[in-house]
Each structure stands twice: as structure tokens, then as C-alpha cells.
Amino acid sequence: MLARIQLSDDEVTQLTGQLDAIVDNIAKVSEVATPDVVATSHPIAMSNVFRPDEVGQTLTHAQVLQNAPDSADGRFRVTAILGEEQ
Image (tube, rainbow, N blue to C red; front, side, top):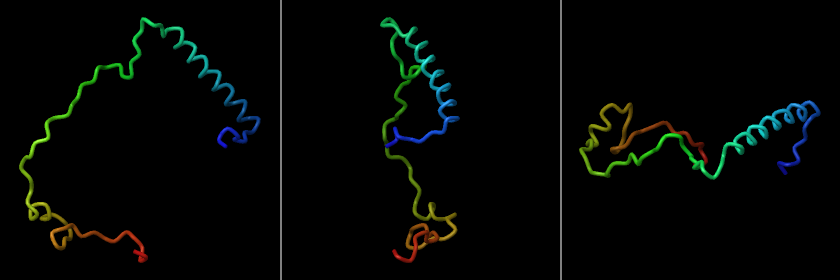
């Protein structure tokens, strides 16, 4: 269905020029891309930045809730955002 988008004559003219530019740029890349050039997804080498998952100090319930505007039963209390049907 997307291939059947209705375009005005002005839109066709504008998009034709843009499509020509895209095809020209792809042709330029194709000229440079040779079997000797390794394909890359990122110009700078990336490394894994994950660290081991270790248990550390955690906050108590009292510390977590001390600055909360409202709390109840050890949880944050917030304004309802759902309608009455819930």
C-alpha cells in the first residue's frame, strides 16, 4: 500500500531531483568500495564497557522515601493517571 502514495506533479519533480542525488552518492561510494576496503559499521573501534555486576551498598526504604512528596505502605504515592474504568 505504501508504494501507491499519491504525489502531485510538484512533489514528483522535487523527489526526482532528490532521488538523483541519492543514486549519485551511492554510485560514488560504490566506486570507492573495493574488496580491499574492509566494511565498517563504526569509524572508531569500540570495546565492551560493561563491568561485573556486583552487589554494593543500597539505600534503606526510609532513605529512599525521605524526600518523596507522598508515600504509603513503603512505596511512592503518585496521582492516578488512569481513568475510572480501572
